[in-house]
Amino acid sequence: MESVAEKTLTEGKLGLTRKEVIKIYVLRELKSIPRSTADLYKSFNETYPLPKREKSRSYVYKTVQEMEIEGLIAFNPDGRKKIFSLTNKGEETYNTYFSVYGKSCERILIVLKKMRDDARNQWKDIPVVLEDDDRKYISKLIDVASFIQYVVLKHLHHHNRRIHGYEVYQYMKERYSWTTSDSYFYEVIKGMVELAWIEGEWDDDYRRSKRMYVLTDLGREPNFSNVEDKALYHIDQAYKFVKDLLSLFDKKG
Figure: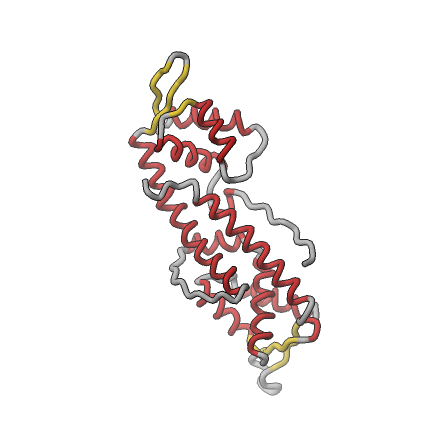
């Protein structure tokens, strides 16, 4: 496998800010047991599932302070310590975050798992209905170009015949309830022709209404495996990231 550049995944890919994700983490921790800010930070440092950044300590302390001001958490004094617990408003906020972002993560994971399983020839038909935001998040999470390249080449390998780009576009839409814009899809197809992985020819030389594509020798090995590895790498990376984010939600609560 050729080396693949890692895609930087942040909370923003799923419509959240870093502060919102830390809030979700604090709310989840306080659902189980009241804690001091120091205990919350210790837990954060040991169990926070997403990548940490510089100045995390001061950021966590400041976020806890803001959450107290917002009425999401309240404290009881224990000597010089403040022991925080969840307020009703905090619990409602946590549940709202889950209904919006937690549910979105669950739907996105189904699609990413389909993509992974299909690449490994472990076909499973798991129904999912995506919302518009889910589709936008998926486009930000995966390497869209390499995934389109992979699906096009796999279709040509599997069917061993000429295909029209729209056939693959519709397949992606029906299989994953997701696809990119048609203009970007055909831009990627054009790039594949320029790389000589596929060749385009008119279905009817007289009418020239439908462009059909065939596989070239360059579209076979080793290029096909390299494209497949790159697409799958980014899907695996996205799957882990979304799964880690979903772990911030106590679904029993």
